[in-house]
Every structure is written in C-alpha cells, then in structure tokens.
Image 1 (tube, one colour):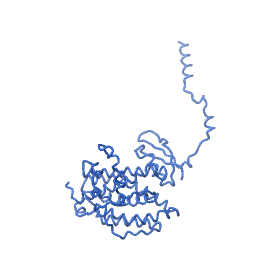
Image 2 (cartoon, rainbow over the protein chains, first blue to last red):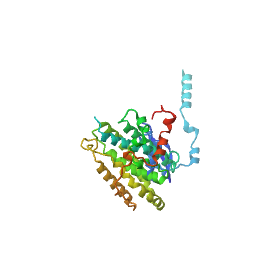
Image 3 (cartoon, one colour):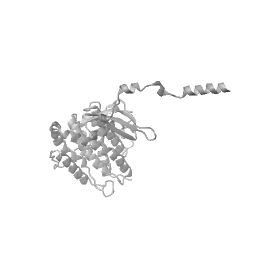
Image 4 (cartoon, one colour):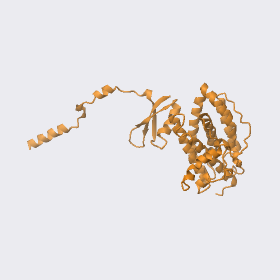
Length: 90
Length: 244
C-alpha cells in the first residue's frame, strides 16, 4: 500500500485545501478510494490526489528560524511616528 | 402511463435485487478488509439501497411495506443477490457479477417510454459506472497475484452460473412499447460476453451455458434469505413507525 494526500476545492475563489490522507494499492484504486473517503458527500467540486512520496518536504528547522519579528511589520510603528510628527508641527 | 404486469414485475425484481444487495453489502460496515475499502464498499451499499428505494417508489407510496412487509413468496430477488457472502472473496466476486448485470439493466432503461423509470436509470447509471470500476480494479489486482487467483477462482466458478437469473424476467411487449430499449435476451448475452471476457483475461474459463432456472423470480427463496430478511426488518420490528 502507498499513502496518498487529498486536496479538495469548492467552486469559487477558495484554493485547494488539504482534506486528509489514506492508503491505496495503486493510482487507479487511489482515485476510487479518495472519492469515497473524502468526496462522497460532494465536499468538493475538484479533487487532487497526490502520492505522498511526491510531496517535497521543507526543513522544519529552517522554517522555525524564518520566524523573525521584523518580517511581521504591520506599519504600526511608522504610522505612530508620523502621527507624532504631524501633531508636533501643528 | 398504464403499467403492464410485465413492466411492474421487471421493476419489482430489480428493486428486490437492489434491496438484497444493499443489505448484504452493508453487513461489511466496520469489518471491511481495510479502512479505505470498508468506506468504499459500504458507500456502494448505500447507493444500492437508494436504487431500491427509487424503484419501489415507482410502484407504491408505501415503500416500507413493499420492501419489508411482503410474504417471502412475493419477493422476486435473484438468488445471487440474496446470498450472504460472509467471506470477502465471495462478497467481492458477487459485487462484480451483480454490478456488471446492473450496469446493463440500467442501460436498457435509459430513454424508456416509462419516463420516471428512464430518469431513475439515468441517475443510477452514473453511480453504477463507478461501482463497476471499483469492483473490477480491485478484482483484477487480486487476480493478478498467485494467492489472490488461488482463492478467487473457485468462488468465481461457483457464483458465475447464478448470474443469468438477473435476466429471467418476462419482457413480453416491453421492447415494443419502449419500456425497455434492449430485450432481456440481448442484455443476458451482453452480460455473458462481459463476464467471459473478464475472467478469460485471468485464465479462468467460466461455464455459463446452463440456462438460469429463475427460482427467485418465481417466488422461491434461497436458504440465505431468511437470515437476510431478519436483518432487514430488525429496525421496523422494534419501531413499526420507523421510516426508511
């Protein structure tokens, strides 16, 4: 058995969203089982079924290191400085 | 339209076959050979019960009574649909034999002059194509292995001869008045060809030469029917007001 990942998309602008995973002996049966396990109640209008082995997995340590506060800039600080400056001028 | 006796019996036979097969498939809920197959197989069971319901509703307003309230001799189910098949090899082989027949039977009702029946056939056939794909891909995969072939071959040889009973109904006048677009004999031949070809692929030569006796259609039930019927009516006996 091989493990597959299922992605579903509803009609409209929403992207494909991961729905879950399951096992199947081959690609043909994978489509059958995916439809029954994740799409039998019309949960999506489109479905992607991906062999998990084909998923590129990023390094978790590198992902953790990417969490730096200066990358979360929401413009708050600059806005406050601007406000202070304009009230000083008036 | 006025429904002839032949048309009525044809639909009732089909409905009873679907009721039995749906009930039998649902026996596997939670004990299928693996989780994914369990889900797929029992979802097919639900579809088949849906087909039975749709067909009964063409004949009566009281579906529960027609489905569960008749004497054994008034059922018309084929024996192959009644068999309990409580081991997976026979459940799978019967699933494939039944659905090959079912696909042909629905196809022969597309564009029926009985409009509601034709509409029902169109909806059912969409599901049926999926059922047959499911059954065949699993069966082919298992037959490709030595172990699978060894275990499935005797079951195939045992069950195949019962399949012709699905085509025993009398179709007198039904092709002429457009209820059927294919005679029962043509449907039967198509099923025989498909079954023969499928198993020839795996060097299993099935013997379908024997004409079916049609015991089920004449009111004689198989030995398994009583057990199956007890399961079917379990809920309605606890709660007679329960609705399907």
